[in-house]
Image 1 (cartoon, helix red, strand yellow):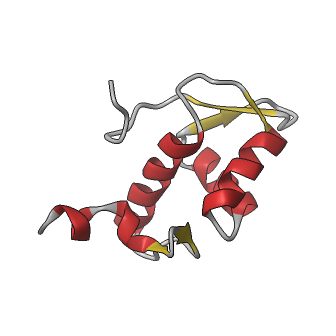
Image 2 (cartoon, helix red, strand yellow):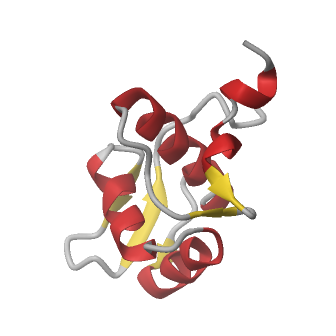
Length: 94
């Protein structure tokens, strides 16, 4: 498989994510990729700012924000006011 067909970017339509892939492995890949695009590691980010960043690349920013938290890539304060990424992915340049 070449890099293009293995890339999470293959799920974008004109540079935007119109919906998450159905297959779990593909969905997880896309979520990890997006997490690295919208949040630096351990960068506290207000809910509104994260939602705005997600809205730039996805049709459903709120659903995607929820997916980031449910996947364990992103943690949030109890009241949901701040979010931060806590996990390193293969898409991080370390």
